[in-house]
Image (cartoon, rainbow, N blue to C red; front, side, top):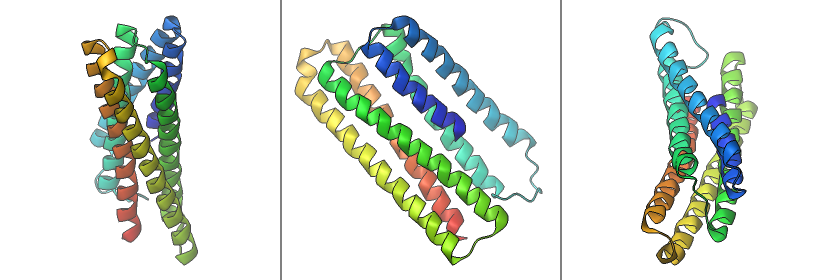
Length: 204
């Protein structure tokens, strides 16, 4: 999930740069997002091709591959948000930008929690864990679920604000705003899937 975390942080920077109309910076960040998305896809392909099926792993092979798939989906979502912003020179009206900034910060924190939970579970599976360690892990997953709900709530605020203001936007801009809102929701959903996958691992 390291690459997923990097792309979400880059997305926050890109949206801030677009608000400042720093289009040179937007183009630079967009290029890095494209590159990181390609890296995530390459990593998934290499692990799928070269990870031996009989190898004893701390994390079962199917679960590892599922987490890689989720990471790839997150990076693709970020790319799909960044692309119209960069290529169309899109800025968000002030009321939307305020909500969007908060939403992006929440998403970055949520992906960070997902990454921390993955690392913690990987370490616990490797070293072995008892009742106390299991409770710590369960607490982390509960916190991750709470963060996902916060993201959902913020996304709903964004959509409500869009609904209030959409008549004042050019039609094509409104379409892109809604597409971006949908992609942001998919990012939060992907983080929720990480939590669900880790809960399944913990239950075994």
